[in-house]
Length: 494
Image (cartoon, rainbow, N blue to C red; front, side, top):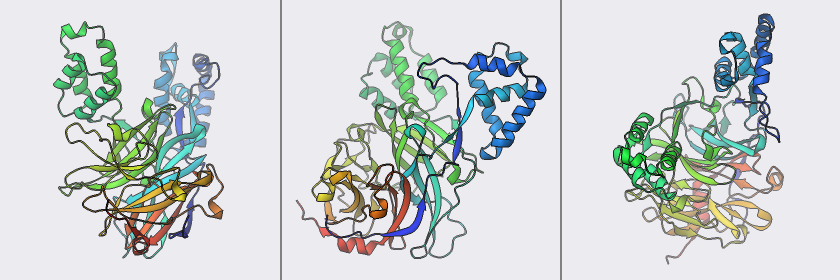
């Protein structure tokens, strides 16, 4: 490794906060080695309580936990609805008893009790009431709780003037949002069916009856409209099951307007992400027409397989989730460009597991095509593998790409590349040393010897870099953009 760190660390860190909790469904017995649901017996015991005792138990529970959550009674009612089929005498349970059943079938989960890491940073949708030289930003973080289960959380911060950075208070009750009706895309559904080998007469008929964008009701009507001669085919049942499963990969979540960004949690909502939503790379995308929106790629993990997913939002309050398709998305670490280049949508990827590549989204079927290699491991600090640290940052000199490399003892460090502004398939400059590497205070943690970022930004001529330390906590660094550019070595054209 040559040179020393260019970036300056700021005296500020976000540590995992075990007080940041959500309420999850808890079914006693399901967590045992030998699954034996005890739900019915517990409900019977609750039903046998006299009214005064039940009321006192509920009051104590709400007094103890009410301030820690948004509308805890609504959560109890929802959890009661999920287990009420176990109630043998539903009509005999009073409203108080039903809430109490919901309470007994609930538990708190600390979303970041184990670790907080891998942040990305974008301009906040609210830039009101700021002084000169300041920028409000939204920081996404990977939160890790019990069982190494990851979700996506947020912080709000302000940058400037100078190297000043402040982070807004993150206390208060968390909210996982409300699942709402999603809009689905026919091209993504077709691509998903083709990837899984479900291109047959049934799927083709359903796809042919759907518009380019459709909601859940339209989808069900298309399934219900299958001709009788297709319904009798032996593969029809399994095809319909696959159609529903593939469509369900897209969903939408919205948060109440009075819940601030730092209290919003994007929580796993499908089977594909049941073991985590990892390493979101947020970017603010500007279309050729000038419209802007927030996009993010992340890795969905079900305990065995990974899958690429995309978040889209106009305001970081309502989120649409959709799968990503194509050969370039079959590994972790996809990062979108902040605008089309030459009319094409581009992304960085690492589909082979060790090389940074450039992929183009096919305009006809929205698949991300096989990538063009950009940068392979060749320096001592990155010989195991390289990847991006978030979306490219547009500068006058070219696309600045923050990279991560893995060296001896699986030590991660952050570097940088520069891509041609008009031909981003060409690397025109490279940082010979590192931008940031673990120092003596960053050697120990949940995953030792790691600094890692999912995206920074440039504000007032300064590159601001949030980064995870040892998959345990989040820190911040900054460096003048001119310093980074001056330290780069030109890469000869091939």
